[in-house]
Length: 605
Image 1 (cartoon, rainbow, N blue to C red):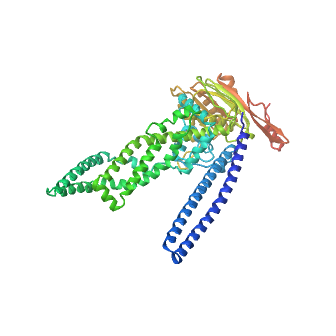
Image 2: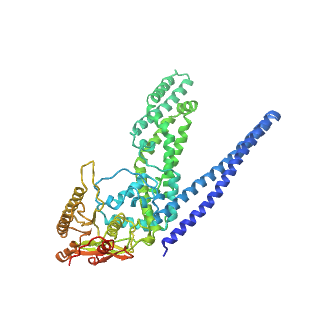
Image 3: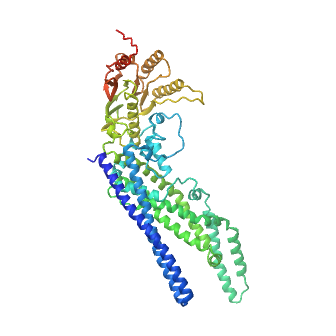
């Protein structure tokens, strides 16, 4: 089995290889830049010598040779510069992946997205979105929509077994296809894909269709042309010049209806260019060989439907754009439209493509954005081969073996085991810095990954489906006049309401040091009462605390279990091993430290 160290070595080797290639290409680019200057000035000198001292034939020969040689050199130089651009993107991709493995936040790009709801059940407590978040760690999307798609998956409130299994199957096929994943990211970067909203292409697709009007005018003009030709033939045969009237009717019809096509022609080149940016990506997905990934092929089938592929529409748009460009010359426009309704024919073709693309393009882009989110999750699995796919259970249960937090570098992370079932309430005792909060977040963030369809940071993970709810990092609000304690009370009240709801999915809750905003006596009374209230409701979860009195609830309530994080003293310092253990904490090392430092400690008998 490959390891994380294998991935690191592979990435470092790749960076080294592309850096060497980049250096060679940059050296060649400088040489060709200098060569182009030599060709230009040599050609100019040859032209001037021929012009002043030789015959005219030598002038033209020198000019043609210079243009051809300079054009060839420019073409080669452009290809070298394109290679440089690709190398830089490859290096950036590999460096970002290396940063993801080593958890180097400063080297992982952060995507700024629109804000989400403030009262989300777990987002802010578990650092799912924002700076130094799970979303930032995972996101390799090049489009805003793809990034938002991944964010939505990570913020899933009501998980679906069908959705999870579908994503897991796709991700499993995508994991070994690292060349496919990186190539798609490369092509997306080369195309500078940004969100489609607000672009001319989107405006064109959403604009009112003039297909019926243009079709009607095209039919009228197509009827008038043969009539005018017939009248002109009759005129040549000696009949009166009735063709003049027909021509005026034709020109009048064209002139008064020109509004339907003038603006369309102005943006035709922009439409072709912008669609071309997307088509390069979609064409890659269209032409890729999916022989080793049948599930991914089925997922991408909209890209290669017969006669409705992205490449076929791009070719049609390119042909129409080329045809439209001819009418920009006034003389050509008059000649083409006198004998044939040239403008309205191609306007009709463009509007027809628009009607078809209005249905197809959103479907293509939606598939692409979903694929970007899937690639982010499969890249995470590829970089962390020790992680595993969770198993979905039918019962209300969670079993985790060697579970760790994805934000802690793997080499220094401490793995723990944990299990809970039914309506169990797990109370975790431990001092500050012993690992309580981190363990709660470890469970929570892995449940988020589970719901998104991703691998989880564990050797084994089996769980039912839950509604995840947390109360860990409570933030008071000065502007809203809400104190820390009142904000916590509101949060816990919301959880109680969720637990009382009739729902097929139980709640999995994670509560850290509840009622810490009040005094010790009230905190103990409130905590005992709250734990008793939730112990028989539709959910299971963990509550961390300092209050040793709460461990007595295990003797009063069958569904309560005690766990603890242990600490030891070495050379007068508190040492934590961050290992979760069953049962109540047996130590009072905090008192020993206080005594050692000369503080008065009154021990109870």
